[in-house]
Length: 173
Image (cartoon, rainbow, N blue to C red; front, side):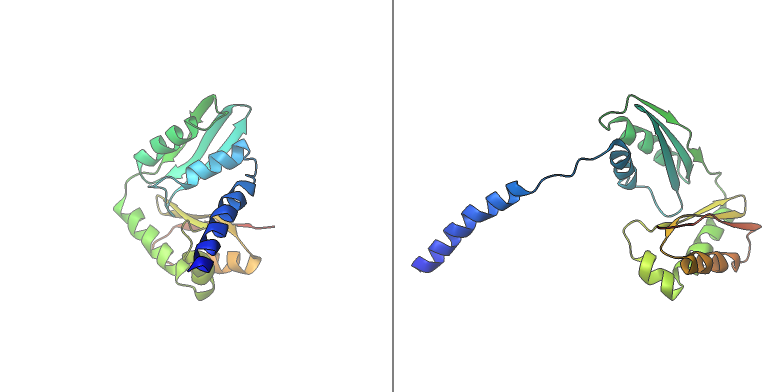
């Protein structure tokens, strides 16, 4: 019993000291903005948000499927320390049942590929974003290899109902 009490006492002294020893990595303004945008509750695989920082001015861009995501993004970035002004150039995609069906079909095609589903499909925020506007499909995001980029493009191109598929996926370096 004495050994257990001594062990618990020793651990209670070591744990707080170890927790204080951790140093926080300094967060840059772009990292803080990227984090805030990624944490938006309604931001999903069918939205694509971009930003540019010029001093304290942040210019938001990209496309979203819901108008509230546009407002949420601007409000989230506005509260980041160091941001003095937000220019919200985010486009709200038109409401279209045909585009909604196409989004889901492309999602199923891309993320049902075994290599893509295991690498990207089970992430909290998948890195392959599917943007559909008036029947035109655009793939945005970052993948690990040229093979993944090609597979995603082929799978998206095989979906019936799209007028055109643009593969803008970037390869991580």
